[in-house]
Image (tube, rainbow, N blue to C red):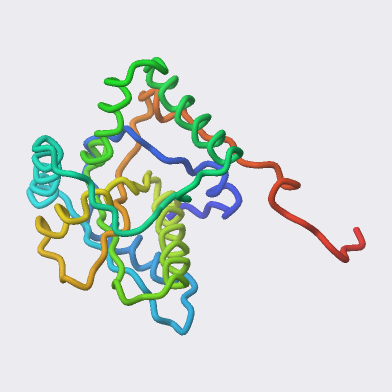
Length: 227
């Protein structure tokens, strides 16, 4: 494995929404998930479960999702991803990210149908060769979601270090009931998100899209430093 500095991995990593058909082996996925599990965990509870899919089982899940959406099945959200009342400054960030993404795809702001088609790509995992469904035990507390988030970040960086690309798919939770049924998940497992995993398509315009990050003074405070 190429030795890449953490700072470089963080700088180069982005959410990839177009993939090559190049397969990813079970050994590669297993190594990435093993690295992800090394993330910090309060009381070593190690919350979260990962179902890695490729081939026919992956195709079956995507078919179930497509059929559920086409039938007019209402989304089922078991947890709130965004604030119920989005503050104006956060709404501005959300809109800016969305507009930039659609601009990279050549989708006009008023092209509602085009935007819906692109959003539906979430449920096809953007044609990645591997999809990962992330779940958590419903009995876990809110702090365990933070621990799971650290494991997800470790997963993304472990994939990046191996020359692979990822994107998180929070929209998968909107059809958690469909995923539950398709994968025969235990009743205690709540679907948190999906992850697309594979080799990025270097020629896809959408993969050149990158969101901005807030400047350091906007989110950090320093007290007592002498330098």
